[in-house]
Image (cartoon, rainbow over all chains, first blue to last red; front, side):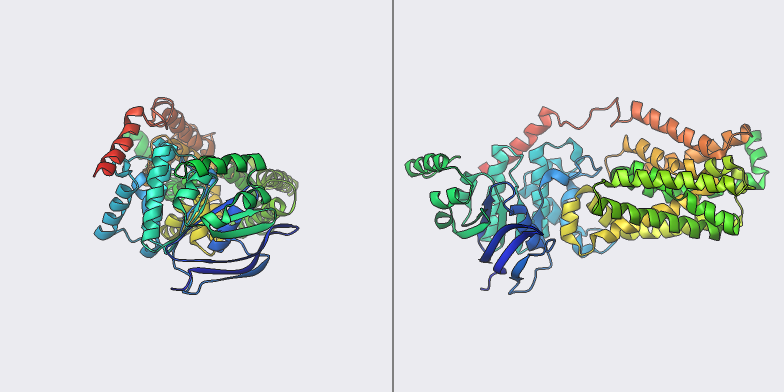
Length: 252
Length: 300
């Protein structure tokens, strides 16, 4: 099966500022790629480049199977307007608007899909609530329902766990695992190493103008994490000693 | 009451004023709703002032015709919008400061030119509107703009909702995100021009913003916001025109906007999302519903 996205010799940055150089990576269907790095290392820029919102300084990005019509996307919360007058059901349904044209309503099958997605995300009970009454976790679940409805072969999640409680994170991670099992490619920007180690198959580490990647255990070694400015040496020593003792519960 | 209504109705200019403001309300209500939701309320106000020199220059050159109003106003409005974007992108100023600088220059220039040219139109009706000035061409202008606005909204509504609520997601969904924004700004300028005769340059944006902010206190969905915004707008116009008729010295613009202001204050006081209502925070009881749903799912 060809990779969903093929990236060759990619240099990403802004005029006068290189974020990282020479990244060549295939993003395969049925994998979960965690993107890690210190603030300003280029994680969100990388996601925006995959969406086509940002051009690389050098290098190529190609879609061997053709660019998917829909790319699932969950942006950071910073620009989201939480006071907008819209109900949970309608916010999620935006994920299914693309095929509808300008003024067609969702048909019965479409409405059922919305209901199922809300149920999957654990917010079926809140379907009629206006979004300004939701907690951060409830809103993030609703946005996950929207990604479910986008039904995309490639899903990009930018810091999906930034403001959610542990219950919600566990629930959302289960959805991400299911997406992987369904053969979708998932790219997620994360800060917390523990969620990566347990739930992602691959990692892309950005920092120090470099980009290293591979299966999680190869890409995230104490050496690479320190060399690329993600952890200090003492943090790395402490963390990996913890991991050696209890591999199931590595916490930063 | 009935006497008053039949007396008003016996004047052709009052009948025209009622028709034109009703159509105008249908047109400006959706514009106002999205100005408020997009955080552009003050930008709308500034834009209303910015088109003044265009209208004035058109008036000085070609007289107060609908064509001169449209051409002059559109050139000034689009000019200011483009210059604002340019200043915000290429210089240190943010877009609000750029727009404020430009509209102040434009407003001052407009009033200066109008006075220097020794205008035949009294300054007051220019700034605050006059119900006496609504001829057939003005009716056609309002009707045309309203038709264009409502048809455009049928097409733009979904993109506008997504781009207002979640702009980054919207960018990921379209190749030309700027199209929606620019289209909306163009509709704004056209509606300000349509509202100019009845409300004047200073009050034109009042009929957009106040009914929309009043509706905001009641609306949890965009549909309610749009419908209620229109209802408040049209009631403001009818009551405002009646007041303006009862007190012949008062210009129509301020009396209409004042009534809209009344709807705003009442809504702020008693609307479910105003001072009186329970706002934003979900109660603890509701939070546990999610936890219950989740636990139920896990056990299944």
